Length: 505
Image (cartoon, rainbow, N blue to C red; front, top):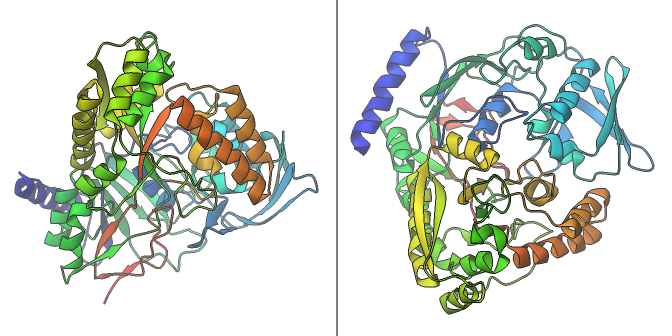
């Protein structure tokens, strides 16, 4: 099966390149990605692989460097007012969008206001501190904040800071044909097959970009992605399975890139989203969620599925973060789990359904969980779901519990606020705790690292008590690259950056 999948990709790629006018003179980078992205609208997108596309397609107001420092993007410099409630940005001049529209302060105002008001915006809670946006002059934008927000600049390094062309966005189907101002422009998309970007010849900084086309090919099976890379059908692939690391490092034609992990995998419990879970014991009784967590052996998951290469987790902050909370991960206790179920009046086994992304690694994780939880008093059914559909069902509340991954953000607010704040845009389980909301807001409003860490410590402790999310492990998003690809540098946010990436001569 793996062989035929690999051959199909190679044949499909050849047909596709011929149909798109490919010639031997063109340089084409072929990137294998772990899932087909959801909508190509940065305001509503939720997928990790979608961020790959936006990184090549859409310039952002600010960016990060390899050490997570915030650096200029479409904003050349910025300053804060004395009370940290007014952020003023000076914008890069001479930038145009892919349709020829001019980038200026009015375009920024349009984009930020769209993020704050568009129904279904998953950026809204990320920038909810913004009260109003003012155009001070054609290339100066002013953000007036409701309260200070230490995380705002970090949020603007990602999709919240991605700028779309206002006229094209207002009249077009953004999710199907986004128009940005990045080094590559949208060419075409075939769902579940490919996304093609082409070089934008009017880009303001063309020198670091060397490919005429970049083609993203979704291949959910990590082994098939690697097989295609080794066969020469792909040039670079994201997310190498831990079981394939030795294969990559022993292949003289390949190299491995392993950024410091910021992201995590978790089990999300549906506490109050949608009618179907209103009477579920997982939704109505904290003891049942606690029991599920006690049934998990996080270290065993790491050893069995990942060969010890990942790090078990009990919180959203990786141990590489200054905000990591030093709380030991308790060992698995199946007897305690069964006792908690009994205290909650549950007769074991309790049947629950776990929604799982349809890739083999996630399936293996889910099968290990299924086996562990059987001894803890749970009968876990696994529901394999295509990734974009999984995200849609999370958004609509159509799940009981689900495996859900997050690729991580430079600022801790980006790893927790949207997921557990009462009005968080990614709070799929509809967890709500007024005290947690207060701590999260206070952490946003402080620039003092020690004060913020104390607040996030309170949040982590409360989450461990309420258990709206069971964190499993921190996951390094490992890349495998053909050695003919030069200049690729992994960043902690695990995104593909194409500046200075080229083929060896």
